[in-house]
Image 1 (spheres, rainbow, N blue to C red):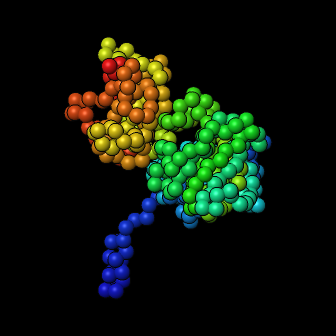
Image 2 (cartoon, rainbow, N blue to C red; image 1 turned 60 degrees about the horizontal axis):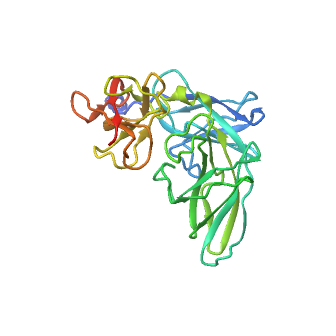
Image 3 (spheres, one colour; image 1 turned 60 degrees about the vertical axis):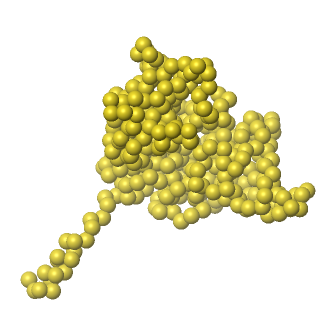
Length: 344
């Protein structure tokens, strides 16, 4: 072997190995069944106006698609070839590891209606008006949330929210001129916070972000989909391959139903939690999943929002090593126990 060839071989050996591709498979469906010809794309975040990181071949006749990506977390969005339908995964973001087993992700498609623009009564202000629809029918009691950017990843109340929609599904949000992201939610349990439950409704505005100027009103249609029953079965992997699970119990060790585990980044636990579990069942079991490890703090309560009030059930995790919970990326930490009691 020549000296040049040896140096070239040595240089090649020092190059980092490429990450093995992970696979996301799934199906795109609309109101009347599977949709063909829909292009699914993977994005780094929830802003689908940015450049996609990966693009699948158009969905097949049965709606199936296959997407190869490096291990990581991705938001999945899709459009039909004529842009008449917009689809998204209700589990966004979807996290995939280096496992050879494909991760399944279903996307629900909704029809897209063009926005219209007109004059607003106040020349120094603006508004976004529209209608929330499910299956083409108006949705009452939907809340439309407005976010100036995606720093909160559509968590919390954002810049503000509309009054609940009327029986015709209509809403109006007066705003300063600017660019905004809109989502709609219907929580049938009546709460304004916490993870959505099976049967609740959710939707992104297909035109996100929408820009509105002074003295202008933009009218939009905001379609929503129903959160599927199977969402609770994805609790252990919905937000990543790092997982914790355990029991919520009372002082006597009895499992408690209807409580949610909350994961925080700070020990004060006063800010919005990073992740919130589905409510516990009669067995008191909770599950939380997230992309990466770290040092966390864990609590459980039966209501969400604000400081725990008298009469509420609340408790903080107190492990053998203290309140801090250290979790490695990819770890599956089981057997945790959170003891709750009534706040006085």
